[in-house]
Length: 255
Image 1 (cartoon, rainbow, N blue to C red):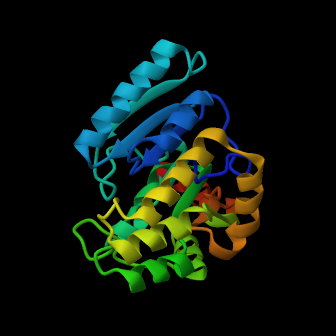
Image 2 (cartoon, rainbow, N blue to C red):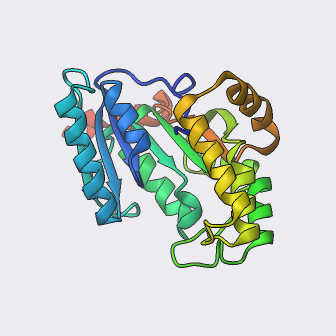
């Protein structure tokens, strides 16, 4: 289940991609299938080991085109182990709501992104997330849980402050909002409640079968109750005026 829409976020074979806070690896796997050179990074060592196994299985099964590469590694989002301007693409999906220093994470992503590179950021949407917080303290008052709820304009303002230029937004996963409302109402850890089990079966069926009826319904509902807010941005090239003084000063410095 992808949150990033690759029809709005084009990926070229050979692009170097960082999936930051990759979790179980869903976006990293898709980028690998599309021919990218992927680095999947997360602080959870257990998840990274699973992602590495899936990368190996995909390679063995011939799911990735020739030239594509994939690496899974542990790392800290606030101190990325990469040189400046290392990646053409950065994806961070459902991560920033967990991190106290979200500005620091944005700064690190901008640092490792090449000028002209693209970034995709997804976070829980304000409205559906507020319902979850209202229904259940356990939903967010846990170690490693959600510590903030972003309004769309607040996230876009942070993106601009970091030096990025947003170019598109949308909402995703409307059918998942009621599922989380049910979980919050009946107990976040209570998977045995009949409404929760029944709705979960519906979601699994939808993911596996992708029937037209639910696809149309979700597209119609996404603007209203989409669970995730997705923003796309680019890193501008330095303006000529910013580099001209340095170039002009070079002969004088050489004397």
